Structure formats: C-alpha cells, structure tokens
Image 1: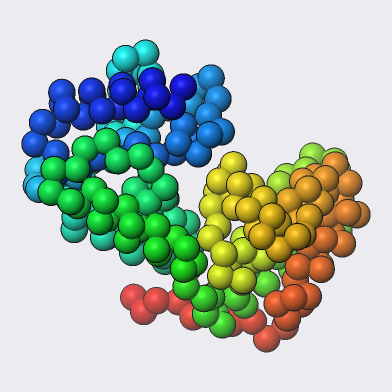
Image 2 (image 1 turned 90 degrees about the vertical axis):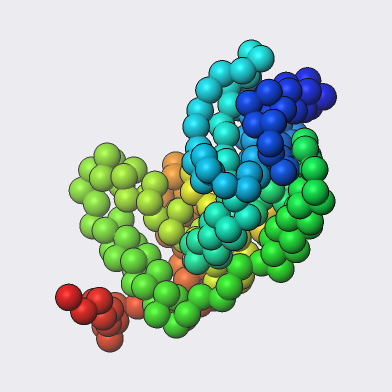
Length: 236
C-alpha cells in the first residue's frame, strides 16, 4: 500500500505543482495504520501563491487532502500547533516520506519539524491548568447528578476527553482531538507503562470506573477546583 501511495502522491505533485520546492506524504498511510477509507495527506511547499491553501480531491483511485504552503505559512501553523498542543502541521511534514525536494528544503523542514515534535509541547500556564481542573470538576458534578442514561453518556463522552487532555498537556505530551487524542493517549501509555487509554474508554461503559480514573488524573495536578476559580475576560 505504501509504495503505491507514494507513487500516486509523487505523480500528483509533479503534475499539478511542477514548481514545488518540496512535498511530503504524511498521515495514516505513512504511520502504517491506514484503513480502506484513508486518504493521502500531501503537503506541498511553494514559493508563493496559490499557497497557502488546502483542497480535497480524488486522484489515482485515492481520496487526497492537499495542504499547500509557503515556508512562512508552515511556520505559522507550526506555531499554532504549539499553542493548542496538537502537532498536526509538524507531524504532516516531520513524520513523512519526502516526495519532492528541489532545494534541500524538504529534508531541512522535515528534520526541523521532527525535532520540535520530539521536544514536546510547551508547558501549561497556571491559568490553563486551573481552567482544565475547573471544567473537569464541573463535569464530574454533572455526571454525579445525571438523571438518565442519555445524560450520563453525553457527559462521560466529554469527560474522558478533557481528562485525557489534562493528563497529556499537564505532562508536556502532545494532545489531539477524536481518534488523534486516543492515539496520543496510547503513545503516552506506551512510554510510561500506564493504562489510561483502556481505563478511560472502559469508563464510557461504567461511570464508576470513569470517575475513579478521572479523579486519579486530577489528583496529579492539584485535584478538583471550584471555589476560588477566576477567569479574566479580554477587554472590550
């Protein structure tokens, strides 16, 4: 599958972006966890317009997501990745197969992104940590007060994700959303010899298990927080 994907991706880039400085194939195909519906995540580096932009298409029998950038826009989105603890841009370029590299920028940016991913995200500020603790505390109260199974399911589906984000970002590990969050949580467990991903997901079927696990995570970062919490708004 990988060889076919690389061939199709390289052909697409050379055909549609003949002036590309560099291009990379990233995502699930390169990671080795692609499914029957997986697409090709291709990042293309140009010197100027039409970058930056993205588009979706079908090519060579594959669904394709194209992310077309300049060096400035790559840097911009890498900085945004740092702010939200989700290394989307950095993984697309860093954890990739180089398709095109006309001037050395392909290998250079790949190594730079890999180094940032390996270094991990920035630390939470005290305010960011307190906000997560406060949100999780409220969700635990909502879960305790839930009057129906539907409400319990709705609250639990948010609670496990917020607890996972606290665990990951609190320890300067990358986070994510959806299946990306679960992938990062599994990576954390593998690195630390823990079992948080399995227990949190099991908690969706047994809220007692979820509450115990979430409380254990909270306790690592100061416990529940309600009284005394403050959040300043931006001046208007």
